[in-house]
Length: 212
Image (tube, rainbow, N blue to C red):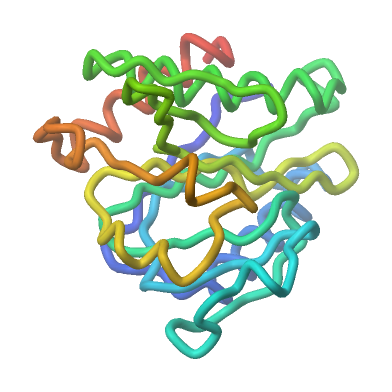
């Protein structure tokens, strides 16, 4: 395999446009006509529904646009201040183990957060990466949702740098119980990190996890 290409979009990317670009790139990777790609971007405020989304978990359906998507998972929020990293990788050339790939995505986030002295953790039965807040409280700082087509992945991860956390109140994020779990961000945890610094950590951690 050749080196993984990286693309960063400075402007907010509409969700349908992102899907179209990913679909085209996945097809090109599958045909051997393009390299693997990690795309860093932000979306305008929206809710997306994964394949396991429950209608009852969309609490304010008129608040933002809602998009059904083929990725795994339930409802999530995307918006400014959240770094989305879409990973279009040839998994057949990377061992053909989808479960391992999801674990690698989790490790990618955990290692990225460690650059800022944050301890992100997995939780059995709960998708994403979590921050222990003490007194039994845990908040989600990153979402993970993937789709694989003929061994090429797309969608990926979303890390909350400094989004408007109140926007998550329009959904039950990923089906979690809001009485026990919440959503947080690097900014809410007191970490003044720029998007450029987060991107640099993502690139360094990707190399550590995926061997690039």
